[in-house]
Amino acid sequence: MTANTELAARRESAIPRGVATMLPVFTERAENAEIWDVEGKRYIDFAGGIAVLNTGHMHPKVKAAVAGQLDKFSHTCFQVTPYESYVVLAEKLNALVPGNSPKKTLFLTTGAEAVENAVKIARAYTKRSAVVAFSGAFHGRTMMGMALTGKVMPYKAGFGPMPAEVFHAPFPNAYHGVSVEDSLKYLDTLFKSDVDPARVAAMILEPVQGEGGFNVAPAEWLQALRKICDEHGILLIVDEIQTGFARTGKMFAIEHSGVEPDMMTMAKSLAGGFPLSAVTGKAEIMDGANPGGLGGTYAGSPLACAAGLAVLDVIEEEGLVARANEIGTLMTDRLKAMAQKNSLSCIGDIRGLGAMVAMELVTDRDTRAPAADLTKALVQAVAKKGLILLACGTRANVIRFLVPLTASDALVKEGMDIIESTLEELAAAA
Image (cartoon, rainbow, N blue to C red):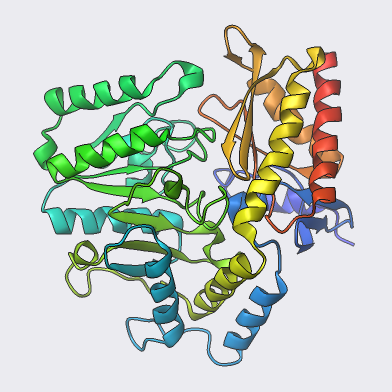
């Protein structure tokens, strides 16, 4: 048996330190919402590969679809000789993405690629160059992805200069005193002092910020941005990379607001653990790029497209949109009960949509000062008890819950028990 410590030492020698690892635990196998490491220890997975596994690890239907495709061929490059699964999956996404406008879909490999290509398409269609993003955003680690991202450490530090003509406005965050009015007022000032809206190709936003701390975009703010974009001929790009595919209790989080985006970026849970991303948008806009301007060698892999088709079937057949709301209620009710305890006054805020739930940890509820050290300690401590948990937030003090939507109530409750008992221990020792 290979030990985690041995593999960790080999990892340190072989892999650059910039590829950070949260836990020194090496996975041997996984099923649904559980992982077993190389030493045989079992973990409840509340991370889901960072929102990739809404349908769970190794879902039988996804596994069978990929195995069936592998018996046929693994790769041709869609730009050389295409294949039907790419077309069928595109048709399904075109029908699923909100709004009545005719849609078209481009497949890629990663979320960052989807974001990069959405910006390319927006610039090609509008013949404009500037892009507006928002504070606390995360849109990837590529150069344009970093420029759009609204968090410096660790994503932007040391990697400049960033691509030009990217502007940021505040994302509304009531818990930290940024209202919808504040955000819109700043955007108006931005258009008056820094960039002519007639030069802006697109705005890009997450309807629930992922890395930024699971901050939920108010519906009235999204609706206001839609009006502003329409007024100035700006395209609205909605980044559903972390929020999509039933996570928030809708197929896509933007559906909570009734807003139709011009383009939507998707990845993560689209293909149940296989590398696949997509840009779906209004057909006229998606046709803005010249032939040959879009694509990639591995873009829309036949294995990933087969997995994506199976994922859509699983979401529908197993009722995972409704299941997300059930899991979200289970978690939120438990967190609210925990927050009522005098011993857990470190829980400052609980928020989210569906099963995209977060708790923000603070040193003082009145000042709302971040408890970043406690957050980090909680992640490490629960791992020793067999739970994989993720932190996030621009102040590194938010715990986010991304348990697979196929997890049982019993497993979710077991994980929540570990969190409560561990947080009690850490708070008492502080």
